[in-house]
Image 1 (tube, rainbow, N blue to C red):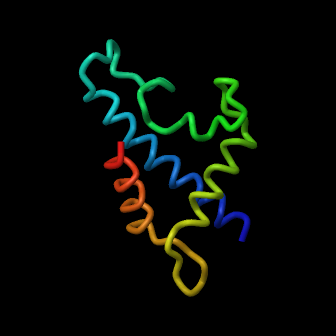
Image 2: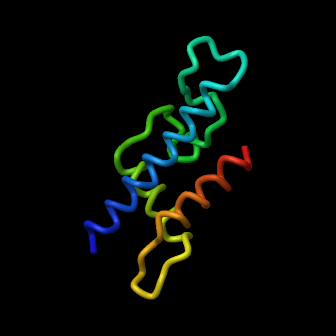
Length: 94
């Protein structure tokens, strides 16, 4: 079960970062098209202690919270399609 959670977290992160990278490259005013904490991508939500750094613990807790909020099937699994839709919804809010 732990492997499934980590796989889900990895997939979430990949989808999130892929979308953010594309969004960051399209933003006007971004000199190099890269991502920063100031690009408004919600990464500051992970920085719970406000030190400008994201620890592994902060990262894992944030993504576990995201996973807990997702729609799951009867086996407690999240479909890739549902995960992608959730990530798109998050990106549209920004």
